[in-house]
Image (cartoon, rainbow, N blue to C red):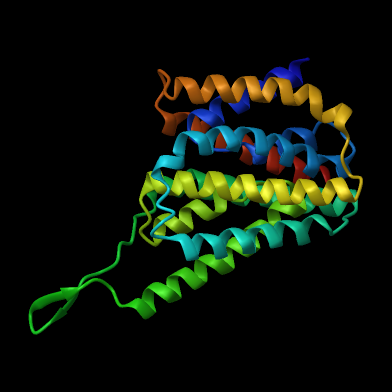
Length: 259
């Protein structure tokens, strides 16, 4: 029962700051003794619930009309990566090793995400006069790099059950995307990745609904309450940093269990 309450608490806190919580779910499941083949599918399903609520709140900030082609490619590649990653079967020790490393990297990136400065397109000047924004080839190069990362993070999402948004958001921030739009992009990104990965696990019969359903009730309750409140006495950045420290410590513990 305590584990269910912890899942409720993580869903509540993560939904307050616009995150899915996949890294927290896999971390908790990884140290709870649950059979490892059911961990990704369980975490992915819970991710679907929380990020669907998050996308509902952030969808108005997603400029799909302007970025339509880019977003279609990003989501298509991420879904493909998640589906491929979920097809790879790992032994328990291999899975926990990759999971531990992923959690540590995710927590470090999340901790320093707000210190990453946005890099908006630099203006071009000719003869001392402003002549327009950054060149189109440079924009295309930036988008191409983002698409590559999008596929790789999707692959990781399917492999271990992490949505990948915590990896993607700093990349988008670095390339000058508005913060609120990033929340809209990543929430849908996580939702689609998680859906693709979960369907693949379902086909492979790596889903235990008797395990998922009890967690589902507590997670959806936490997500609805957290997203409805939207803010708390603690600043969201403080909540997020506390969560990332917890994830980092769990990642270290998982690695120590397998070394």
